[in-house]
Length: 595
Image (cartoon, rainbow, N blue to C red; front, side):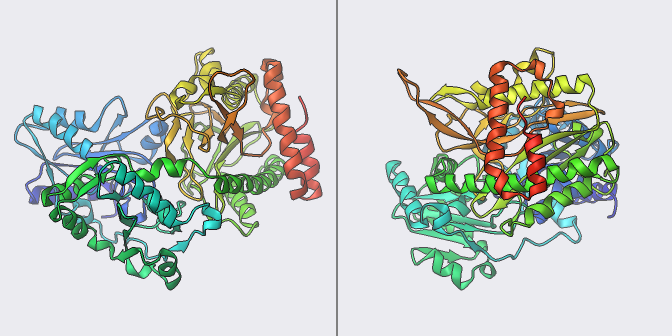
């Protein structure tokens, strides 16, 4: 099955043999993860789509792939439109498409380990309107026909020391236990991989770019817990670190443990956002009382403690020095005409690794030249690799996983001379970035209330961008962390709290020509205002790296915006100058000159 047409036909054959008329394939795993291990990349194997968010639906005579505005161009380049009809999320939902195309009496299958219970209820109801039925499958039909499907990673667990975490695992479990007692619950199921990693102060290598391990956990109201993980991952060091109050069990025992909770008539807290439908079904059928509640680790993990904040600052200084070295190198090499998207990305990774502290990149580097820079989530490959040409734009969105922090930064550079339109568009993006960075807002403000600050100057020119303005970032964990978010769609209703880390990344993308994004990570901090009648918050910028002044139309900046840019660049010079060589330092002084 070397072609996607063959793979689609094989899946359809399996469905027909099981008397199932359709099937839904999400891009996630049994932990509802955004980034998944290679064994779980079923959507990519079936369709060819390499993005980080998407769905497919397969019927006997038709199929569709669903992606949002970030992937409008990418999905058309990677997926055969003769096999899968392109559908735009959120305009067309999977449930609605199924409801429109399913005939009366048809049975549409789903894998209960890959969907939330909310999705199951919504989709089942929509299909019922058409006289069709949503049915769970015992084994995923993609897995049944995927020859050579990778096995889940067997990489061993790593200890994340309390000196970096700021709290011991025992202290965190006590907090979870208190949370359970407050709700009259006996236990909570922890399914999100970053929550498991945070709670037990462990890290893993089971998912590319995200230091998590495939594991589930159940925590009791007495602060004792069970950790379900493959035995080969547990070293003596890990066993000693975990301690006697945590029972380490094989991952395959998880379903049995859920059933035992039900048989004991336990009251179990389950997060409908991170726990799949199968978890609810096992608990409920066995007799457990289910309390729907958000995973208690999520908010605690999002609000960084003083140790994690100090680590984030240190990681960003280190990362900023590496990025500055790259920017100086790029400035010298790009005009020679020999650079490509792949060679530039490789050089940046090499420079980051020279610190000897980089554990991994925090995501696949987005290295886009010319028209590829107009693809917000572009993923360079040998097939798509473009040279970096003169008088063109190059965008690099990258980050690192360090033991003390996770980084994510985007810089856009011009090679040669920009057009006036380029400078106008870039400056509008920069003005939006500055407006958000300078924002002061009351405690309790939500990210969706701030999103307009970053878009306003683009809106004035009838322009916009089709992605959120800011996402949460973990502490040596996921580069995309909830619940905090700055967006008007897809979230953003979580109140921002001091200690949260988010990105500030407005952009502009002219399809087929160029794209811009300016991204720094920011820390939510208290702001003291004389005479204030309520608690106020603002942002401290963590990222330290020059912004390309050759793209800035200074005449479009207000005095306050120019003051912010000059102060930011002065800080970049002050904090990085002693960490780079003399030639880089001299370039840095010029790159951060006052405007």
